[in-house]
Image (tube, rainbow, N blue to C red; front, top):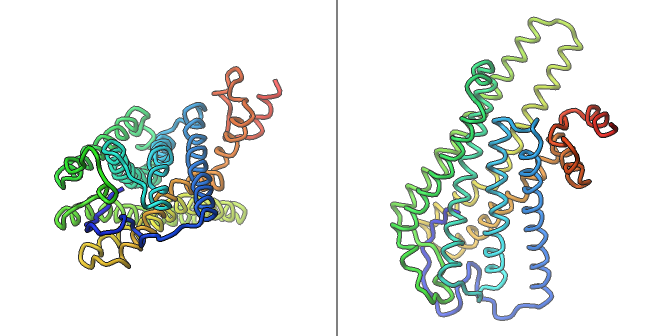
Length: 340
């Protein structure tokens, strides 16, 4: 992820926390067990989302393809970043070789950038669909969405490679790196650029767009009330609007709550540079990674199609004939299909 850190070498082994003089074996085991649970939840949860959207034809929509891209980024965080990052916090004396160090930093920078812009694209997609439903259905095809996602991943990779390279983070990693050398250094100018490009612009866009979405939803509900005077239709419409607003907002709200503390503390660190800010960065850094574990839980709670897909996958019914044609949006049709 995009760290804007400038650390100094110290006599003790480097750590975001103070050097541990002694560690309880039981505590270390408990921490590793916790990490194992978080990593398993992240990998398995996002893998279920990936399989669901890739397998079931009915779920292959432009919006779900953006969710697929986000799930893929979260999945890679669980596979690559978490197994390297969390053990380094538990055991500060752990050292990385050159290759592992590069993989860790490129992955965390790259995947965080992908996730942020992916959430921004989801906001744009929902706003376009709600404000211009006819043009959305005609213009936002699967082919166009796939190209946008590919451009997003390529842009994020190029930007973060440039950021790391021009700050000497790749070339400075020696073949036999010692503890404390596998860190990221970003100068003040690049810190400001990174803060604007990766955090301020996309997050501002997300907030503005979702405010617009809620405004459009409210206007549409008012139009329905003015045209249809039937109380039952009125109640149904309002309930539907509240449910849609809740579903659209939860994912973004949780994402911002996990992301904002890190970038605010990191940006302050450029000017303050003290140990208390470093500790805050470490804690908020972990929170950003934990967001990759939270997203599948949000899908399970607010998307019925994910719950049904989850059951079909775990019961191995996806291996049945024509299982990809199952109507996961309609439980009754699924029952009829499976009984045949």
